[in-house]
Length: 427
Ligand code: ACO
Image (cartoon, rainbow, N blue to C red; front, side, top):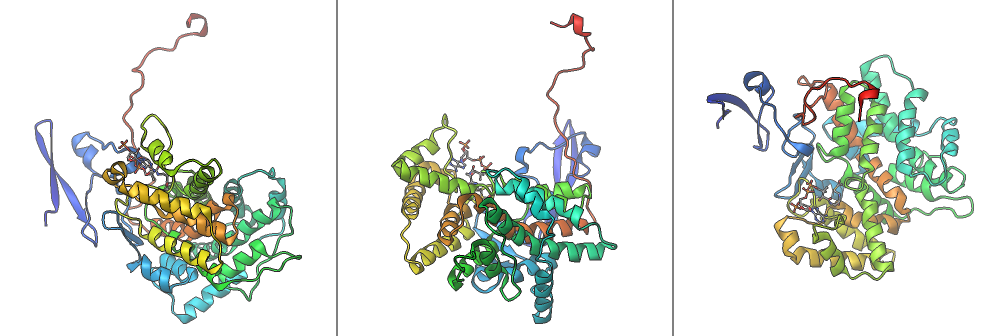
């Protein structure tokens, strides 16, 4: 195996080291490139840039493979709980029974949120998007739970605090936005059931937990738990590289996730399907618009930076979509539109040639709305799911011997130097 690559530039040849990952993926290590050659690399959107070495998640976009710590996503979605998956991502291995019990106790003990935080919630205007609220509240946690003595304590306690409280905070924001009484976490309920109860229980209509509904949400969270160096995870790593506290880094991740090209796509898909349904827009028209270069419209829930095959998460969530609708005997016209859209798009040359397949967001919104979540909570649910991944990536970056402050370079294309002009002499 070659362990160097050669670059020829200005009549000279330079040897560049090549590094190889566990699954055979190769990278040229350009850390010394500028020093040796005067060159930097140019890669808008970092589509061809490895920003770190990571042992957390492996994905192969060409083959549609996703594994957390080596375990295929299909197996985790079939057999694991979200709690186990979170532990796996953060600690690098599945917990044994004693570790799982201890983790459960910690998650329960830290699930309450400081009562004073409710005042903040009350101050947001009613129409505020819950992602903006969640990002602000997670950042505010640092004021309520100041820095701990040791890094070990900081990592262990802050991590469980975040995992436990984010669920409570998300449900609180929903209840308060509706002007309803906040429902507290219950120690007798499992992680996902507890969240559903905080969301939907009411003094006038007790919430009955359906095991299939709870499992569907659990699977949704497992599928979203990590996805290597995506936009929000990179935001967590970049912000964290300045050595801010974990709450601030996660708050940055939540803000990044909010965008419709990233985590906000699950909301955008339902809005697109609803519009098609309500305005009776033929599915072919949506496909034609998506293909039209002069139209900024894109088929939401289609395409992915890394997957150039069917997103393995989309396959799993699509199955859950049917399971849940059959079980609850609901017929959702949006599912009909989604399936027709997928069928037409997958046969269309434009989508075939650009390798555009449904991504996880295409069907997940239908699952979430079947459970009863309002559309503007979808991305918050994604954030709860992605939290263990963000934490695991932040933790890994803290221990990384190659760690450096994130600080890319640029190619300056502005004006050359000119002298300051006093205001009276300017045009
Ligand atoms: N509809 C129509 N055309 C598309 C779509 C789409 N959904 N996605 C990509 N394309 C086209 C682009 O116009 C571009 O065409 P061109 O080469 O002729 O200019 C080509 O496919 C490549 O697209 P890029 O934008 O360069 O691909 P990139 O990797 O930067 O973008 C992204 C990936 C942002 C996900 C894109 O596919 C998209 O906007 N999809 C819709 C939003 C979405 O579903 N986001 C969720 C992603 S998954 C997640 O974050 C959980």
